[in-house]
Image (cartoon, rainbow, N blue to C red; front, side, top):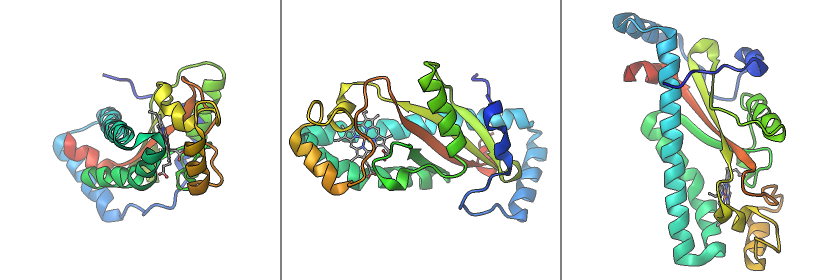
Length: 217
Ligand code: HEC
């Protein structure tokens, strides 16, 4: 079982709050009751949140990559940009609804401005960037928010292979002219080019209500 790592770097986060809905008093009471009935410890719940976060992000990644590969086969790289532009966010929101969590990809070198980090995500992303610069591999992480009623699972997104570079690599080199024109039109302030294989591209972020984790145990 994977160990839950709560990084010292980000320990100030417990006080931070995001734009998300607050957890009600009734929910907290319901969670406490369920925990008692099932005699769960906090560590068991954190471990389960970590395992679930891993599996949700793997599923999301698989869906995005399978669909992206199909779009490239059918329409070529420039045509597949429309797939990412139109489909990437809805695929994540469908999965979010299915599991009653909030799944996002975020990056400081974002293409879609909707993927900018939130206040909760910023320090975690910065810790991953810091490690990447130092050549240290980052592990997934769990942080608690809203008095421990919400977990934020995060995991680095690293560029795995050259396929990504046809849209995130060097303009004029890996990104061809037609692709670049489409990207510039759709994303005039695109920051997501110039990457190499092995680069940190961003981070998965999943907000998981404790209530949903307790239900799984
Ligand atoms: C066909 C072009 C294309 C390819 C190939 C591609 N991407 Fe993207 N990528 C995009 C577009 C377009 C967006 C913006 C999506 C949106 O508007 O929601 C994006 C967004 C992202 C984001 C979200 C953060 C941001 O910058 O907005 C991540 C993370 C990402 N891509 C990683 C990858 C990885 C990893 C690969 C390789 C497995 C890859 N991409 C391959 C076009 C591509």
